[in-house]
Length: 338
Image (cartoon, rainbow, N blue to C red; front, side, top):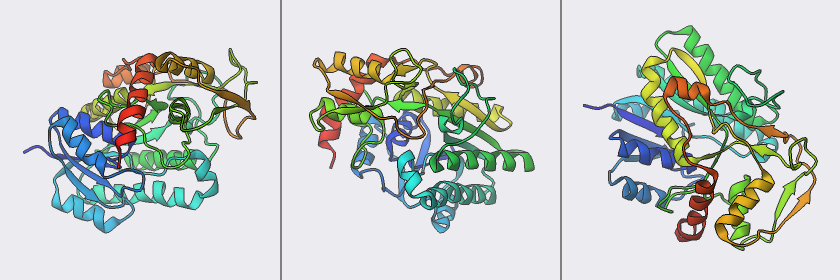
């Protein structure tokens, strides 16, 4: 009988897309999510898109009793760990929440996995662990640092995974450092649905394009980039979800805790993103220049060659597809969420 894949935070933006891909690929899936940043309607949409069922457990990854019960009730062969708080700005205001939820939650998860003999993990890390990189594209062996509690919590978890894997053989951990996930499922039924004011560029830009917000504030136009605005590596969420499946498949060939970038290897500026979405929606999108945000860096994009080498994975969906699918979600799926 196939072992199950536990997906923590599986009702969230990236998690939900990954669960669809897991189900379509034939995996048995157990989703654990406290629904603090996801709507229950997502669960039915996942089932409809995959045309397969899965087990859902509403619980917090910080609840160790619930974790032990999941492992006791289900034969878990591997874990894909998304659950965690993820807003950079909020982390500077609520650092204790971020360390408790992200670090302590992962510590409890790893202790539970060890207790049940499960040593296969795909961890949702972040390019924020590179801090302000001295050069681009960013390679996995670059120095690591963090400029905010969110990024530091991810770096601390990576250190925890490295120390654990060094202390005990048999652990196979993929530390997936991904860059800027955007877009949505092509059906328009799954996408990023931030609560309140979006923290990231693309969901905010989509709301401006839809007339829900008056304009986009571009944080600084004096960076050392071609048009003065920040440059980032934007990656379609479906490509990212498939990257997690590739990592899961590759785990038996990995040894220890292995960092792997997931990105396209190409950077786009804020103004290029505005122009790309304008092509999709067919009308101008209002924007204005504001001051830089503290902690923002000029440019950040990946060298994704290790993912190709170890996982056989590369991003395939282009910027126009990211914009098209994001806009489809904004007009259809997001509007019909309840």
